[in-house]
Structures are given as C-alpha cells and as structure tokens.
Image (cartoon, rainbow, N blue to C red; front, side):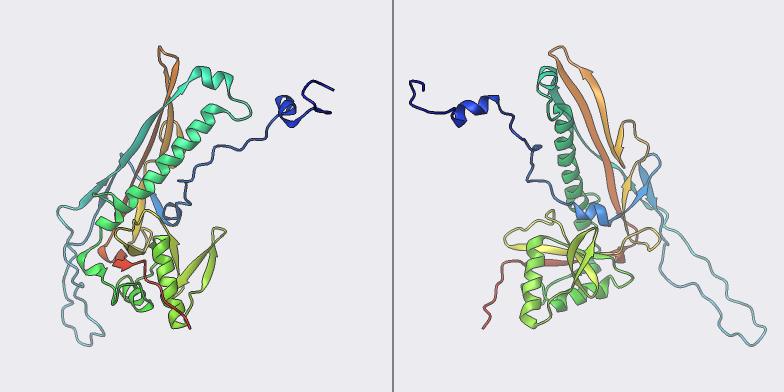
Length: 303
C-alpha cells in the first residue's frame, strides 16, 4: 500500500498507459446539401454557357388538313440576338498546414487529410449557398416576375403549393424549402386533415406534395420569420434548371472541385489551394417558381 491510501492503481494513473479512442473532427455546419444532389449538372467548355432562346414565343404558322392546292404557309424561327452567357464562379481558399504538426501528430488521423476534408466541406456548403443566393446566378435572383406567388394567408398552405405547381406545370421535379418552412407547411396540412405522403430518395425520407418531393435546404434563409419555397424543373432536355461545372481540372477531386499543393513556405507552412467552380442556369423562365414570404412561425391548437 502506498502513502496515498489506495489499495490498487487508480483510473487517473492507469489512463497514462491507455490509448483513447477518438472520432474524426465533427463539424455541425455540414448539411446533406440536397440541392447539389437533386440538380442535373452540365459540363462546360472554357467555363461559359450561352443560353440561346427564340426571339418571340409565337408558334410557327402551319397548315392542317389542307384539302385544296393552295400554297403552304411560310415562316421561320428567329433567335435572340444577345443571348445570356453564364460564366463559372470560383469559390476558393488557401489552406495552411504547419509541417511540424502534420509530421508529428498524424496518428491515428492524418492531419493533412482532416484539414482538407473540413475545408472542402466548408467550400461545398458555400457552393450551395451561392446556388441559392448569388446575386448573378442564384435561384432566388433568377425568377421571372410572372413566376412569383404570394401566399393566400401567412403560412404556406396546400392551396399555395398547388398555385405554385400551376406555374411550373411542365414536368416539375421538386420543391426546395427551409426545414422550418417544410414544418410550417406540414402543420397546415395536418390542420386540414391532409398529411403529406413521404417518399424515400437517396436513402432518406422526404415529405411530398402532389407526388413532388419537398427537399430541405437551410440556404433558403429565414428572415424575420419569413422564408421562400422554390419549385424547379430540372435538366437541359426539359428546358429546366441546370447546374454548371468545369470538368478535367488540374488536381480534380470531384466535379468542379480542385485541390493543388502550392509548396512549403520558408516558415515551414505547407499551402494547398482549394477551388470549386460552379454556376446555375435557368434555361427558360417557367422552369423556376417561388412562393414568397411564407410565415414559418404559425402554430395551431388542436382539440
């Protein structure tokens, strides 16, 4: 027995010879980024997409069931003279890693790998935010005036969602909404006795309305208790919304994402350039609609 009065080795002393099981670094800001998953992505050449459209939307003059030998109508389709061009936007940062740290403290987790992983996650979160909110190509700033719907009341109701579907009626793909807006819509459905059905996509359950998944995205921000709900048609073949990226980048880690080693500075700090190039294009105006300014804080008492 030692002077301390213990009859056996205590936990404090024993821990000095024990290995502690560790987790990788957890990052609460990481989200599923469903918008990136649900969009269809188009590779570009030279980082630019030109969206060509017809100059007027009038139908071509045709003849139907012509019985006589009269001349057939003559017409042509004119194009916009100055079509819009979308240029990829760069989301980039430089990661600094002290080589002494990466040399000495890379077991069981590689410090360089973990630093790159967490930085890339942050860059991808910013990518989704830009896809929604960018002043030039963000979805919220690319909606035509006639595709904007105001709620009948404050909260998003089934009638409001149906009105939005009536605007994006040509093969809509999915709704996009903040989780609080989805919850508000769910409450309105419950109040009316029409709870939304669910569907499993990519291994996760989603609420649906009229068969369309309601996809959560926290980048549709809530401001003063109000948010917006988007409805998209996607894909180039359907003249919808498409994501844009540049393939074949040097140091490509995933589509549009590049990681390149920049060297070691005189202070022994290694530097890595992380860059993600992306944009989004609404090919025709009726591919994207919005239910604006929905109240996400309205609750009901049920008896």
